[in-house]
Amino acid sequence: MEALLMMEILVILLELKYPVYHRRPIESSVVELEESGGTCLAIKHVFKMNERFDTRKAFLLTRKRLTHDITLVHGINRKGGIWKKKRLRTIRDVLYCTNRSLRKSAREVLTWIENSDIERLREGTGARDAELLFCVDPSHINYLDIETTGMRDARIFLVALGILNVPANTLETVQFLARNLDEEYMVCKQTLDMLKRYPCMISYNGKAFDGKVLDERFFYYFNTGIDDILEHHVDLLHEVRHFTGASKCVKLGDVERSILRAPRSGDIPSRDIPDAYQLFINAGNHDSFTRYLSEVFQVGDNNVMNSSKLVGDSETSRAFFDMYRVIHHNFIDILSLHSILMKILQTVHAGLITGCRRC
Image (cartoon, rainbow, N blue to C red; front, side):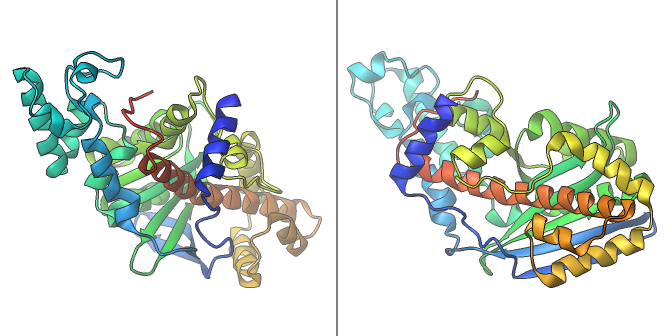
């Protein structure tokens, strides 16, 4: 928590505003998707950005930052040595040093940066995943979060994806909900199609959980893996750990409170989500749930506690309300991912992080 407090101070010093989107969506819809493979529910929200999304400020400035990080050159480390003695400040300075191998390595790194060669930069330097986003088309980015049954052989029942619409200056979220476990196939199929269209994934603990679960289910249904689809994957948990110096896992809720300064109200704890889904399945009557969601979004109130007024005291009504809380929890995760990424990139550009290494 001390590390998180330090990052909160940095955020205040940088005067970074939260949120970077309007809390209330400008558009919401609930539709049932039906194909030969089955059905599932699609829940869509469109959020307007507070400020116009500038791809240059968000990503391209990172290219310039990397050219000033000489520790990307093989043979140079942050602790010191020849680069301090020779007063080398940028990778271009290394091109004029007397060490032939350093000159060769510096030339290679500059070429990779110039060509946005993400594969070589990822494998041949210590650049962090978030720093390599300048190599990616912003229209290919997706923010992803999944919810599972929580059992040992986890089944996916809810997937949320956030997509940047740069021309419209909006963040669009779409959630695919399996109203029963038979609809998992359709949820996975829709997710697979979305990842093919948006192959740069931003997640929180996705390399340890979300990505692995998706990989397993994709292989089960489609005989393909997530690595066959994605161009790049940024796990913000690793970025936050590096940013704050935390040695242990930092929960997303801690980041929201300490860094984004936006604690949630009425949110369902993650540990209760599998049970809430099981109660929802047992309740049945899923056509009524679709109408219930439509009514909630028609009212236009995304405050969870206010939405509880739309349900009664019956067991089915409570199951519907708890499932709505799960859906709300899921898409708020997506909005938080975008805010966290923007904070990290802005801080990198401010020069507070240089010579970044993986956790």
